[in-house]
Length: 272
Image (cartoon, rainbow, N blue to C red; front, side, top):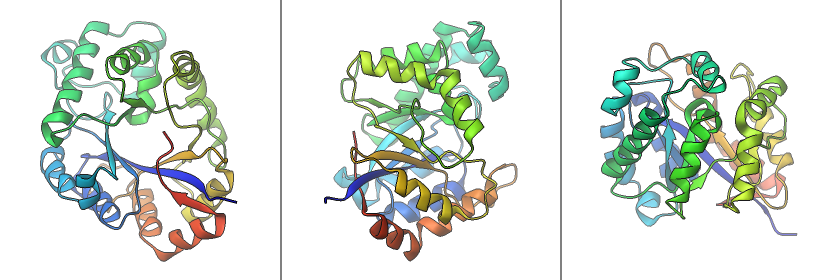
């Protein structure tokens, strides 16, 4: 039987130097298949230069995408800054999106400003688009993301509609109900390629990341899956999941990760 395929995407690149350093270490070792970038953060510009120097990135084997950020950092577009001098918290964004109170035109400008900043930093178009804290699937934002994808036939959108366990069951339910299920139906109706399943959801408190990974590896279907992760050195003040970042980095950088992939009959690769 051929090995099942798992794509592994490290999110939050650009958030801070510690996250950048951790992701770069894994990228150089071939432990990732994709990186999602936050382009509205102070660590993006310098991080982008280092990321583009990674041989796997230069060859196109390691895909880079936009991690749309609307709850951390500063707006890049002047139109959104007039509405939101400071970006909202996730609960605020959730409420406004479901009440259809979001400034649609300003958010369209912000999405395109972040796409432009990605292209300026990397010299290429993003291979995929997803959202920091999954904001890309929220009402209103979901339509803007799908419109951007319609204009870019090669832009993959992260499907958040099917997330097998293990991990935080309630969190997985919330992600589906706040827009993940609707996004999945829309992507299917548009016949857009996307990840078959999404793995990696947990509460960032579990002390044994390897045990979680072993269960996720067992859940990879024959058609493959995408796993998102948040590795980093975790030294910056104000990073609420710093300890989880260090645990993830230590495991993904270890021989144990390679051994667990082999034992599960899973190989790293692209699934969409």
